[in-house]
Image (cartoon, rainbow, N blue to C red; front, side, top):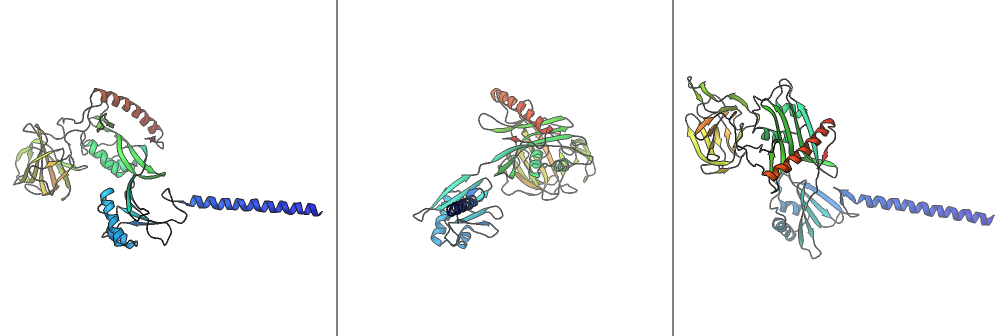
Length: 418
């Protein structure tokens, strides 16, 4: 009996030891898992991270000092960030800074400046007390997302796009693309369908932001307008129609997105101020005073001034054939004068009501070979054309992309892994 009892006791002891081992293993596992506690980065067992969102009035030196860093270290960190990290200033409401300590009450041993979700600059204290800088790009998980919609009675494209679930930033990009081909005031009608394929960027399974428009389709009055984003063999990126012709024109028909046309191009129009009939050599777009006016195309400013008819105006020469004129400005953009080279989309002035004007609007003219033409109907030259080899690759790419778009149209919850 004693032997049997001893055996039972030994068995119980063994069970106790095994149970204790299991508990200790579980505790160790929890400790290991707990090391992954900050944005997917492995933290030490007692590592402490303090995250500071940069606010108005903050300075890099001030934030470093507030974390207990002395003057010598602060100067060294500021200098190494500027020299090796490309960071000389910090931006309020945009940048974040992480201060990392090996344990709660220890000095800061590592600083991470985060200027965007996809880039960070790490400054680490070496064993000799010096500070070393390293830039890190955060890997993106990019999805191709498809959205489609239809214009309802009384809709604008913007309202229909928002209802279809298209992010506002993507809609702005679509406006910029379609403005080369469409007049959003006159070409939008109830029943028209549209679709957009665009990028969404994820990190660690979390959606961070949207990327670029990959393809867009709109059933315009002049016919279906389609544009595809494509990278050429030399690395240049552009947008092309179904046949591989450049979709981006050298000039935009409507410089201000979503602005209502109040007066069209006409050979005969009764002037609202003068009261008699004369030619209206441009198109008027209603917009509130102070609305930025972007250049319709890249070029050089050849005139900037005031006259009694146009009020404050700017004239841009785009090439040997085309010029554009923007009138009734409230003021000119800073740094824009005669001789200034401007990019397409660059602000050159602001909407106003100077000169012969009954209210704030932009008067926009296109002059071709010295003759005024209708901005809404003139055939505009395309830029960034494809050579034969690139066109063949584009057509193959477009065919594959169209097949994916068709699958997404049938299954809108799916996405393309890019």
